[in-house]
Structures are given as structure tokens and as C-alpha cells.
Length: 82
Image (cartoon, rainbow, N blue to C red; front, side, top):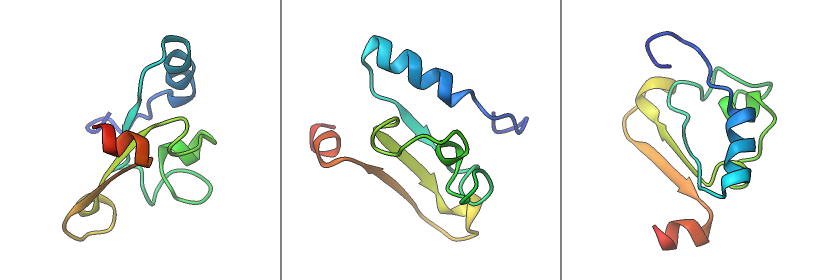
């Protein structure tokens, strides 16, 4: 998706995730600040909830904010388990 600028169908991916009971990791590095009504990224764009519809979210600050570093967030249960 990075080189083409396409947006993955996260709403459909979340449906499959629920059906097969797996954890979803979403990299918001290129979507944070640009997608969604609040600029929070692809999850926001599809009206999905962080930590519920995607258990782990990663974000590189270099791409969206023009800074250095990044973040990886998740619920306490998921972070402690991983």
C-alpha cells in the first residue's frame, strides 16, 4: 500500500479477524494525520476503534509528523502478552 497510496479495506479485514479470532496489527505510519475525519489514520477513516478492532497499532513519526522515532501501542493485556 505504501508505494501506491491505496487504502486497505480495514472494515472487511476486521470482519475476517472477528470470524477467525486473530489479533490485528495496523501500521498507521502513512495514514496518521492524513486519513479520517479527525486525521487519526486508517482506523479513523473506516470508523473503527483502536485497541478493539486492531489490537496493536504502530506509527513511525518520520512519515507523518516529520520527526524521529515511533510508537507501538496496544491494550495492557496484549502488550503484556507480547
